Each structure stands twice: as C-alpha cells, then as structure tokens.
Length: 103
Image (cartoon, rainbow, N blue to C red):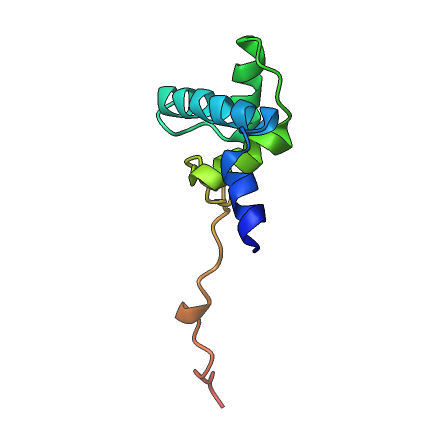
C-alpha cells in the first residue's frame, strides 16, 4: 500500500454503513444477552423489528458471526418406539424336537 493511500484511509471518516453496523452490533449483543444466549439470527431480527430497527436476517447473521455469537441449540429427543400390546407367543425352546416317540 502506498504512503498516500495509507494516510488517506487513516484521515477518512467512518462510512455510514460502518457506523450503522457498530450500532447494530450493540443492539444485537443486548438482545442476545437478554435472551440468555438462546436466540439465533431469525429471532434477533424479529426482536429488532419490534424495537423499530430495520435489518435483514442475513445482515444480522453476518454481524453475529463476526461477533462470534451462536445460539444454543437443543436437539429434540426422539421417543423410543415400543410395540403396542404384544400378544403372547408360543415358547419354541420348550418344545421337544429331538424326542422320538416309540419306534
């Protein structure tokens, strides 16, 4: 990078989007901590919309990734399938297969 380019970038004011992203990150952090780290980007987007802050779900997701925020995901338990009302079966092991009747 050239010297003039460096000093031009250092002296340049922050862009509108960068300022808005910084404010949005603060709001995202508040909602995230308020939800006890359970909300993901979709719910955080809805909560921000309730507060009157417009931001797309993709933008919230990108900013959350940049901040290192992840929601807590709990997997649903799968119920064990048990056979309903099994009928009694004949015990085949008690049969006497090798007993010969009289010759």
